Amino acid sequence: MNERIYNFNPGPAAHPLPVLEEIAAEFLNFKGSGMSITEVSHRSKWFDEVIEDASARVRRLLELDESFHVLFLQGGASLQFCMVPMNLLPEGHSADYVNTGAWATKAIREAGIQQKAVNVAASSEDKGFSYIPKDISFNPDAAYVHITSNNTIKGTQWASFPDTGGTPLISDMSSDIMSRPFDVSPFGLIYAGAQKNLGPAGVTLVIIRNDMLERVPDHLPTMLKYTTFVERNSMFNTPPCFAIYTVQLVLKWIEETIGGLEKMERINRRKAGLLYRAIDESEFYTGTAEKESRSLMNVTFRLPTEDLEKSFVREALEHGLSGLKGHRSVGGCRASIYNATPLEAANALVDFMGEFARKNR
Ligand SMILES: *Cc1c(COP(=O)(O)O)cnc(C)c1O
Figure (cartoon, protein in one colour):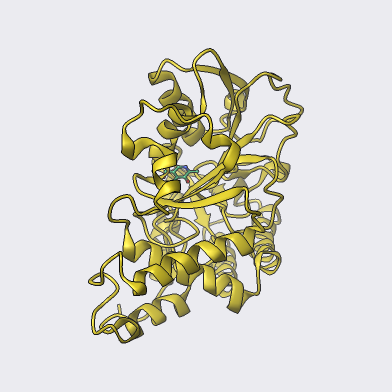
Protein backbone atom coordinates (compact mmCIF):
# COMPACT_ATOMS: atom_id res chain seq x y z
CA MET A 1 0.00 0.00 0.00
CA ASN A 2 1.53 3.32 -0.98
CA GLU A 3 -1.23 5.64 0.19
CA ARG A 4 -2.08 6.52 3.76
CA ILE A 5 -5.34 5.09 5.00
CA TYR A 6 -7.98 6.38 7.39
CA ASN A 7 -6.79 5.13 10.75
CA PHE A 8 -9.40 4.41 13.45
CA ASN A 9 -6.98 2.52 15.69
CA PRO A 10 -7.64 2.76 19.44
CA GLY A 11 -3.98 3.15 20.45
CA PRO A 12 -1.32 3.45 19.25
CA ALA A 13 -3.39 5.68 17.03
CA ALA A 14 -3.25 8.19 14.20
CA HIS A 15 -0.88 11.16 14.31
CA PRO A 16 -1.64 14.40 12.46
CA LEU A 17 -0.15 14.18 8.97
CA PRO A 18 1.68 17.54 9.24
CA VAL A 19 3.44 16.21 12.35
CA LEU A 20 4.67 13.11 10.51
CA GLU A 21 5.85 15.29 7.65
CA GLU A 22 7.74 17.58 10.00
CA ILE A 23 9.41 14.61 11.69
CA ALA A 24 10.42 13.19 8.32
CA ALA A 25 11.73 16.53 7.07
CA GLU A 26 14.03 17.16 10.02
CA PHE A 27 14.89 13.60 10.96
CA LEU A 28 18.38 13.31 9.51
CA ASN A 29 19.56 16.73 10.64
CA PHE A 30 17.65 18.07 13.62
CA LYS A 31 17.80 21.88 13.75
CA GLY A 32 21.29 21.99 12.27
CA SER A 33 22.74 19.58 14.84
CA GLY A 34 23.89 17.18 12.10
CA MET A 35 22.13 14.42 14.07
CA SER A 36 18.60 13.08 14.43
CA ILE A 37 16.55 13.87 17.52
CA THR A 38 17.13 10.27 18.64
CA GLU A 39 20.91 10.83 18.56
CA VAL A 40 21.32 14.15 20.38
CA SER A 41 22.04 14.23 24.09
CA HIS A 42 19.05 14.70 26.36
CA ARG A 43 21.22 17.31 28.12
CA SER A 44 21.81 19.24 24.89
CA LYS A 45 20.30 22.60 24.01
CA TRP A 46 18.39 20.87 21.21
CA PHE A 47 16.51 18.55 23.50
CA ASP A 48 16.19 21.18 26.17
CA GLU A 49 14.23 23.34 23.77
CA VAL A 50 12.00 20.39 22.86
CA ILE A 51 11.01 19.50 26.42
CA GLU A 52 10.64 23.14 27.49
CA ASP A 53 8.41 23.91 24.52
CA ALA A 54 6.32 20.75 25.03
CA SER A 55 5.79 21.66 28.65
CA ALA A 56 4.96 25.31 27.86
CA ARG A 57 2.38 24.17 25.31
CA VAL A 58 0.70 21.84 27.82
CA ARG A 59 0.52 24.80 30.23
CA ARG A 60 -0.99 27.13 27.65
CA LEU A 61 -3.47 24.66 26.21
CA LEU A 62 -4.81 23.62 29.62
CA GLU A 63 -4.33 27.08 31.20
CA LEU A 64 -2.26 25.69 34.07
CA ASP A 65 -1.11 28.14 36.70
CA GLU A 66 2.17 27.99 38.63
CA SER A 67 0.78 25.48 41.11
CA PHE A 68 0.91 22.71 38.49
CA HIS A 69 3.97 20.73 37.36
CA VAL A 70 4.13 19.13 33.92
CA LEU A 71 6.02 15.82 33.84
CA PHE A 72 6.96 13.35 31.13
CA LEU A 73 7.30 9.86 32.58
CA GLN A 74 7.65 6.31 31.31
CA GLY A 75 5.78 3.12 32.18
CA GLY A 76 2.50 4.07 30.49
CA ALA A 77 -0.77 4.97 32.11
CA SER A 78 -0.60 1.55 33.76
CA LEU A 79 2.33 2.60 35.94
CA GLN A 80 0.23 5.54 37.12
CA PHE A 81 -2.39 3.08 38.39
CA CYS A 82 0.29 2.05 40.88
CA MET A 83 2.15 5.36 41.44
CA VAL A 84 -0.98 7.36 42.27
CA PRO A 85 -1.91 5.39 45.41
CA MET A 86 1.76 4.77 46.27
CA ASN A 87 2.51 8.49 46.37
CA LEU A 88 -0.80 10.13 47.20
CA LEU A 89 -2.78 7.79 49.45
CA PRO A 90 -1.28 8.02 52.92
CA GLU A 91 -1.54 5.35 55.60
CA GLY A 92 -4.78 5.64 57.56
CA HIS A 93 -6.68 7.31 54.71
CA SER A 94 -8.85 5.95 51.95
CA ALA A 95 -9.50 7.03 48.37
CA ASP A 96 -12.72 7.01 46.35
CA TYR A 97 -12.65 5.37 42.92
CA VAL A 98 -15.38 5.42 40.30
CA ASN A 99 -15.40 2.20 38.32
CA THR A 100 -16.46 2.85 34.75
CA GLY A 101 -14.65 0.04 32.96
CA ALA A 102 -11.58 -2.10 32.46
CA TRP A 103 -9.02 0.69 33.00
CA ALA A 104 -10.67 1.92 36.20
CA THR A 105 -10.85 -1.69 37.39
CA LYS A 106 -7.10 -2.01 36.88
CA ALA A 107 -6.45 1.24 38.75
CA ILE A 108 -8.52 -0.07 41.67
CA ARG A 109 -6.65 -3.39 41.60
CA GLU A 110 -3.24 -1.70 41.72
CA ALA A 111 -4.24 0.27 44.81
CA GLY A 112 -5.51 -2.93 46.40
CA ILE A 113 -2.26 -4.78 45.72
CA GLN A 114 -0.54 -2.18 47.88
CA GLN A 115 -3.05 -2.83 50.69
CA LYS A 116 -4.37 0.70 50.30
CA ALA A 117 -7.91 1.49 51.48
CA VAL A 118 -10.05 1.88 48.38
CA ASN A 119 -13.73 2.77 48.39
CA VAL A 120 -15.57 2.18 45.12
CA ALA A 121 -17.89 5.18 45.38
CA ALA A 122 -19.83 4.27 42.23
CA SER A 123 -19.70 1.72 39.44
CA SER A 124 -21.48 1.12 36.16
CA GLU A 125 -20.59 -2.56 36.12
CA ASP A 126 -24.29 -3.46 36.66
CA LYS A 127 -24.98 -2.55 33.03
CA GLY A 128 -21.73 -3.68 31.46
CA PHE A 129 -20.06 -0.27 31.93
CA SER A 130 -22.38 1.27 29.33
CA TYR A 131 -22.90 4.53 31.24
CA ILE A 132 -21.26 7.11 33.50
CA PRO A 133 -22.74 7.07 37.04
CA LYS A 134 -24.53 10.21 38.26
CA ASP A 135 -25.25 11.80 41.65
CA ILE A 136 -22.38 10.03 43.37
CA SER A 137 -21.89 10.63 47.08
CA PHE A 138 -18.20 10.81 47.81
CA ASN A 139 -16.56 10.27 51.19
CA PRO A 140 -15.79 13.82 52.41
CA ASP A 141 -12.57 12.51 54.03
CA ALA A 142 -11.25 10.73 50.93
CA ALA A 143 -7.62 11.45 50.06
CA TYR A 144 -8.67 11.80 46.44
CA VAL A 145 -11.35 10.79 43.96
CA HIS A 146 -10.10 8.78 40.98
CA ILE A 147 -11.99 8.70 37.67
CA THR A 148 -11.29 7.63 34.07
CA SER A 149 -12.41 10.56 31.94
CA ASN A 150 -12.95 8.47 28.79
CA ASN A 151 -13.49 4.76 28.65
CA THR A 152 -11.68 3.71 25.54
CA ILE A 153 -13.06 0.17 25.45
CA LYS A 154 -16.76 0.77 26.13
CA GLY A 155 -17.05 4.17 24.47
CA THR A 156 -18.28 6.22 27.42
CA GLN A 157 -17.00 9.60 28.59
CA TRP A 158 -17.66 12.01 31.46
CA ALA A 159 -19.48 14.92 29.78
CA SER A 160 -18.64 17.02 32.84
CA PHE A 161 -16.59 16.13 35.89
CA PRO A 162 -18.21 15.25 39.23
CA ASP A 163 -18.35 17.69 42.13
CA THR A 164 -16.18 16.18 44.83
CA GLY A 165 -16.76 18.93 47.37
CA GLY A 166 -13.14 19.99 47.41
CA THR A 167 -11.49 16.55 47.46
CA PRO A 168 -8.74 16.51 44.80
CA LEU A 169 -9.82 14.82 41.61
CA ILE A 170 -7.39 12.48 39.87
CA SER A 171 -8.11 11.40 36.35
CA ASP A 172 -6.78 8.92 33.85
CA MET A 173 -7.21 11.02 30.69
CA SER A 174 -5.24 8.69 28.41
CA SER A 175 -7.88 8.63 25.69
CA ASP A 176 -9.26 12.17 25.76
CA ILE A 177 -6.54 14.55 26.95
CA MET A 178 -6.37 17.69 24.78
CA SER A 179 -9.65 16.79 23.04
CA ARG A 180 -11.61 19.56 24.79
CA PRO A 181 -11.02 22.41 27.24
CA PHE A 182 -11.84 21.85 30.93
CA ASP A 183 -11.30 23.55 34.27
CA VAL A 184 -8.16 22.10 35.83
CA SER A 185 -8.65 23.65 39.26
CA PRO A 186 -10.36 20.64 40.95
CA PHE A 187 -7.59 18.28 39.81
CA GLY A 188 -4.72 17.17 42.01
CA LEU A 189 -3.26 14.99 39.26
CA ILE A 190 -4.00 14.14 35.63
CA TYR A 191 -2.22 11.42 33.69
CA ALA A 192 -2.32 10.25 30.10
CA GLY A 193 -0.37 7.64 28.17
CA ALA A 194 0.54 9.47 24.96
CA GLN A 195 -0.40 6.85 22.39
CA LYS A 196 -4.07 7.77 22.05
CA ASN A 197 -4.29 11.51 21.69
CA LEU A 198 -0.79 12.92 22.14
CA GLY A 199 1.76 11.02 20.08
CA PRO A 200 3.62 7.71 20.20
CA ALA A 201 3.75 5.12 22.97
CA GLY A 202 6.63 5.52 25.40
CA VAL A 203 5.79 8.67 27.29
CA THR A 204 3.08 9.46 29.83
CA LEU A 205 2.04 13.02 30.51
CA VAL A 206 1.53 13.70 34.22
CA ILE A 207 0.22 16.99 35.55
CA ILE A 208 0.52 17.26 39.31
CA ARG A 209 -0.51 20.05 41.66
CA ASN A 210 2.01 21.32 44.18
CA ASP A 211 0.06 20.39 47.31
CA MET A 212 -0.01 16.73 46.21
CA LEU A 213 3.78 16.57 46.48
CA GLU A 214 3.63 17.01 50.26
CA ARG A 215 2.07 13.54 50.49
CA VAL A 216 4.90 11.69 48.73
CA PRO A 217 6.52 9.35 51.29
CA ASP A 218 10.31 9.59 51.66
CA HIS A 219 10.85 5.84 51.63
CA LEU A 220 9.67 5.19 48.06
CA PRO A 221 12.14 4.03 45.39
CA THR A 222 13.54 7.05 43.53
CA MET A 223 12.05 6.14 40.17
CA LEU A 224 8.57 5.76 41.64
CA LYS A 225 8.37 9.15 43.36
CA TYR A 226 6.74 12.14 41.66
CA THR A 227 9.12 14.45 43.54
CA THR A 228 12.13 12.93 41.75
CA PHE A 229 10.77 14.06 38.38
CA VAL A 230 9.54 17.44 39.62
CA GLU A 231 12.99 18.23 41.08
CA ARG A 232 14.83 17.15 37.92
CA ASN A 233 12.43 18.51 35.29
CA SER A 234 11.53 14.97 34.11
CA MET A 235 15.22 14.24 33.53
CA PHE A 236 16.38 12.26 36.53
CA ASN A 237 17.39 9.65 33.97
CA THR A 238 17.25 9.58 30.17
CA PRO A 239 13.73 10.56 29.13
CA PRO A 240 11.95 9.09 26.07
CA CYS A 241 13.32 11.83 23.81
CA PHE A 242 11.69 10.86 20.53
CA ALA A 243 8.25 10.40 22.10
CA ILE A 244 8.47 13.77 23.88
CA TYR A 245 9.55 15.45 20.65
CA THR A 246 6.56 13.99 18.79
CA VAL A 247 4.23 15.11 21.59
CA GLN A 248 5.73 18.60 21.27
CA LEU A 249 4.86 18.67 17.56
CA VAL A 250 1.35 17.35 18.18
CA LEU A 251 0.77 20.08 20.77
CA LYS A 252 2.13 22.65 18.33
CA TRP A 253 -0.33 21.35 15.71
CA ILE A 254 -3.23 21.71 18.17
CA GLU A 255 -2.20 25.25 19.07
CA GLU A 256 -1.10 26.62 15.72
CA THR A 257 -2.93 24.63 13.05
CA ILE A 258 -6.19 23.77 14.80
CA GLY A 259 -6.22 26.91 16.94
CA GLY A 260 -6.62 25.56 20.48
CA LEU A 261 -8.83 23.23 22.47
CA GLU A 262 -12.17 24.93 21.82
CA LYS A 263 -11.69 24.48 18.11
CA MET A 264 -10.39 20.96 18.66
CA GLU A 265 -13.55 20.11 20.59
CA ARG A 266 -15.76 21.56 17.87
CA ILE A 267 -14.11 19.31 15.27
CA ASN A 268 -14.32 16.30 17.58
CA ARG A 269 -18.04 16.95 18.17
CA ARG A 270 -18.68 17.12 14.44
CA LYS A 271 -16.88 13.83 13.80
CA ALA A 272 -18.68 12.04 16.65
CA GLY A 273 -22.00 13.62 15.65
CA LEU A 274 -21.69 12.23 12.12
CA LEU A 275 -21.04 8.71 13.35
CA TYR A 276 -23.68 8.64 16.08
CA ARG A 277 -26.25 10.01 13.64
CA ALA A 278 -25.40 7.26 11.18
CA ILE A 279 -25.88 4.70 13.96
CA ASP A 280 -29.12 6.20 15.29
CA GLU A 281 -30.73 6.63 11.88
CA SER A 282 -30.08 3.03 10.92
CA GLU A 283 -31.71 -0.14 12.18
CA PHE A 284 -28.64 -2.10 11.17
CA TYR A 285 -26.19 -0.54 13.66
CA THR A 286 -26.72 -0.30 17.42
CA GLY A 287 -24.71 1.97 19.71
CA THR A 288 -23.51 0.20 22.87
CA ALA A 289 -23.16 3.20 25.21
CA GLU A 290 -26.11 5.04 26.75
CA LYS A 291 -26.73 8.20 24.80
CA GLU A 292 -25.85 10.77 27.45
CA SER A 293 -22.63 8.92 28.30
CA ARG A 294 -21.40 8.58 24.73
CA SER A 295 -17.73 9.22 24.06
CA LEU A 296 -16.54 11.77 21.52
CA MET A 297 -13.38 9.69 21.09
CA ASN A 298 -14.42 6.04 20.81
CA VAL A 299 -17.68 5.23 19.03
CA THR A 300 -18.72 1.67 19.88
CA PHE A 301 -21.44 -0.19 18.00
CA ARG A 302 -22.76 -3.58 17.05
CA LEU A 303 -24.10 -5.13 13.87
CA PRO A 304 -26.91 -7.70 13.73
CA THR A 305 -24.51 -10.69 13.91
CA GLU A 306 -20.89 -11.37 14.76
CA ASP A 307 -20.32 -12.69 11.25
CA LEU A 308 -21.49 -9.38 9.82
CA GLU A 309 -19.15 -7.57 12.22
CA LYS A 310 -16.24 -9.61 10.87
CA SER A 311 -17.15 -8.82 7.27
CA PHE A 312 -17.66 -5.16 8.18
CA VAL A 313 -14.15 -4.85 9.61
CA ARG A 314 -12.63 -6.75 6.67
CA GLU A 315 -14.46 -4.86 3.94
CA ALA A 316 -13.83 -1.51 5.64
CA LEU A 317 -10.13 -2.23 5.40
CA GLU A 318 -10.51 -2.91 1.69
CA HIS A 319 -12.03 0.59 1.49
CA GLY A 320 -9.03 2.12 3.27
CA LEU A 321 -10.66 2.32 6.71
CA SER A 322 -8.57 0.53 9.33
CA GLY A 323 -8.79 -0.30 13.03
CA LEU A 324 -12.56 -0.76 13.40
CA LYS A 325 -12.57 -3.99 15.41
CA GLY A 326 -13.90 -3.65 18.96
CA HIS A 327 -11.61 -4.40 21.94
CA ARG A 328 -10.96 -8.12 22.24
CA SER A 329 -12.69 -8.21 25.64
CA VAL A 330 -16.03 -6.89 24.34
CA GLY A 331 -16.23 -7.61 20.60
CA GLY A 332 -18.34 -5.54 18.24
CA CYS A 333 -16.97 -2.53 16.37
CA ARG A 334 -15.26 0.62 17.52
CA ALA A 335 -14.23 3.71 15.62
CA SER A 336 -11.61 5.64 17.56
CA ILE A 337 -11.75 9.22 16.35
CA TYR A 338 -9.07 10.98 18.35
CA ASN A 339 -7.85 14.51 17.57
CA ALA A 340 -5.67 13.41 14.67
CA THR A 341 -8.45 11.59 12.80
CA PRO A 342 -9.71 14.08 10.22
CA LEU A 343 -13.32 14.92 9.46
CA GLU A 344 -12.90 13.29 6.04
CA ALA A 345 -12.20 9.98 7.76
CA ALA A 346 -15.50 10.19 9.66
CA ASN A 347 -17.30 11.08 6.43
CA ALA A 348 -15.70 8.18 4.60
CA LEU A 349 -16.72 5.81 7.39
CA VAL A 350 -20.32 7.07 7.37
CA ASP A 351 -20.49 6.48 3.61
CA PHE A 352 -19.10 2.99 3.99
CA MET A 353 -21.52 2.19 6.83
CA GLY A 354 -24.48 3.20 4.67
CA GLU A 355 -23.27 1.13 1.76
CA PHE A 356 -22.54 -1.93 3.93
CA ALA A 357 -25.97 -1.76 5.59
CA ARG A 358 -27.77 -1.53 2.23
CA LYS A 359 -25.89 -4.52 0.88
CA ASN A 360 -26.37 -6.73 3.94
CA ARG A 361 -29.82 -5.86 5.18
C1 LIG B 1 -4.86 2.74 26.76
C2 LIG B 1 -5.30 3.14 28.11
C3 LIG B 1 -4.57 2.81 29.26
C4 LIG B 1 -3.31 1.97 29.23
O1 LIG B 1 -2.27 2.73 28.84
P1 LIG B 1 -0.75 2.16 28.81
O2 LIG B 1 -0.01 3.40 28.45
O3 LIG B 1 -0.73 1.09 27.78
O4 LIG B 1 -0.44 1.67 30.17
C5 LIG B 1 -5.02 3.27 30.48
N1 LIG B 1 -6.14 4.01 30.56
C6 LIG B 1 -6.88 4.34 29.49
C7 LIG B 1 -8.11 5.16 29.66
C8 LIG B 1 -6.48 3.91 28.23
O5 LIG B 1 -7.22 4.23 27.16
